[in-house]
Structure formats: C-alpha cells, structure tokens
Length: 104
Image (cartoon, rainbow, N blue to C red; front, side):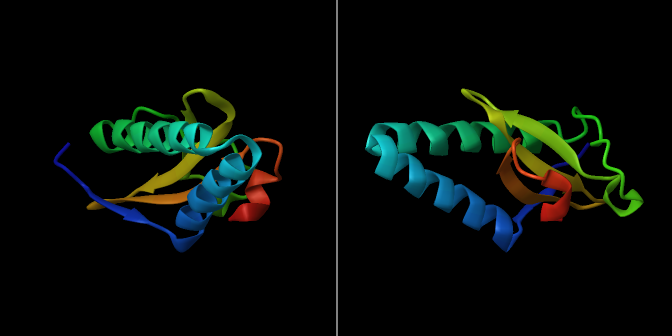
C-alpha cells in the first residue's frame, strides 16, 4: 500500500492534548511526555500498516470502517481511525471506559 495522507480530526487532537494535560496535572511532565510518545508510536504504527487492525464491532453500521489500535503502556486507551483510498483519519483517542460508540 502506498503512503497515505495522515489527517487528524479536531476531536482526536483535543483528546490527545486533554489527556496529556490531565497526566501532567496528576503526575507531572514525565507521565505526560510518556503519554505523548506512546500516542505518537501508535500513530506511526497505524501509518506504516493501516489495515493491520480489524474494524471495530460497533452496533451502528455507519461505524463499520472504524479501526482501533491500543496505546502501548496505557492499556485502556485506544486510537480510533478510518482508512480511505488516499488517507488515514485519526478520529479519536479515548479511554475504554467511555461509551466509545457515542463519541462518533
């Protein structure tokens, strides 16, 4: 597969920044930095092999193309994305305790 354009939904950027800020307030710069690096690594993994993750099993058929990759070291967080013909769109970065389907 040729390199696809990598795009970020505003909600995904907000998710990443808000979680980073939360980790910084709770535990300081080191944890916030570890979070940012883990998310970056996950996004790089998606960019290298976007079809390696199976589509999520959501009840809503409109969401059948959304895929998920775990954030290493933050086991309950996942990066949700869609793969199109020429692009990958990072949609959300969310904690698994949330009602994920309602985020879309």
